[in-house]
Image 1 (cartoon, rainbow, N blue to C red):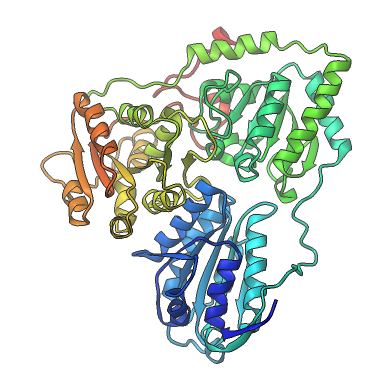
Image 2 (image 1 turned 120 degrees about the vertical axis):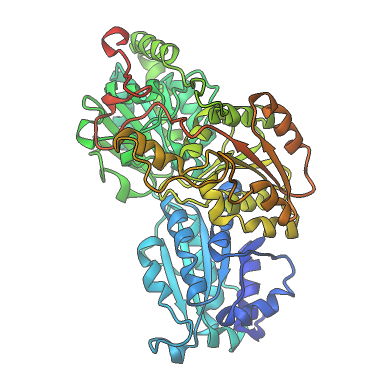
Length: 585
């Protein structure tokens, strides 16, 4: 390739195009301004101007989550870069492939407390997979190529590239590198055959086996391979919050979501299993409950591409390091061979128990007593009317849990949420990014009235850039999940959780007027009998974003629930009500 002379800023834009970036979400400022000039002349790279840098980060995350491609966000130095930190930490915790590019003050000013100087490399080191400080324009192509490779391989994550202003302004001979020079980085480990054989031996011997499928199945694009393993084994499976949709909810072997707000069948299956095969899951506290009481009789097969996750929380009897798809394929091949040779497995009693739990303790809700609509009903109708080909994005809180419970997910990457970090304000910008990545699909942001007020300025971005997302504000006029905990654990002392957004005479703000002020459509639904018609009306608006203010009960709570710090055996199906284990098990 013949070198082309250009500025570092031009090399940065050229490098992004060579790396395969299609869109970048960003906001300009002084230290990144040299790059914004050639961005106007980009041949294949689209720029979406956001209203806040956090929105840029969440949009890049939503784009990556929906498409499997690397999301890209762009910000200036100092406060521009620090505004990205929440989104960076969020994406890193959920293993989302993302490259965050920030401008930095000139090299000569670093360490002098210059105007808008912040050590963003130092600040983000704990919450990125890797980061770079680029002070030489000649290094830009190499670093961008490395950044995209690191972000998208192995366990995906966030790579930050901080480029000084003088590096952007300097002249360089641009050459896109043909090879990667990353000694020591081996992101594609091959599963060990001995571990595969041991895992299959445990599967052949187990009387109460269950698969625990985590977000790594989606991040690894392994739904087909894992689905084949489930079919061959005949073993029940659960999908964590980050794995919803990895396999269809309608699959007969699916027990639902495990954990704090999981189904009774899923939680009980893990607690009573004699074997758990975890693929791409990390045994986090929301799944295990009190760790020393989790699945006390189970042996653990733990497969993960990141060896640091294996035995981090729960000791693995059989550790397997490898990509989810590779592990599943090898397990399936070995399992087929063993079954053909000699199969004495009998899971009938296990399935009888699990089917009884599914039948006796299905997900549901009770009618509200305050005259307001049940939020679970609203969300279930959105899922039913919009259908499984849609993408559903949630914020954090009660509406997130209800969205994970009452929308049926039948395909990978149809459910997007902030799982590990639990970031309020995630839904609107992430839905914006998902819609940019999947423009042909209907994209719903199912948000709370608290979350929505944190990032709703990105409605302006959506209107101006023709990104017609649909926003359902589940408006209980309060910080719902906090209020639920105050109800259950703080003697109903509702300290500073009333938001005054929908109940009574005050609507501060009025979400319909707010939507209209941004140029979006604004709708409101306050009665059960209007739910379907309102959703249908929203479905028919595709020339601009639409915000639907669903006024719902503040007293509705998320059930089932395992309180923090107790055993999963203490799961409650409603306030003060637990499953009758002696009767059902």
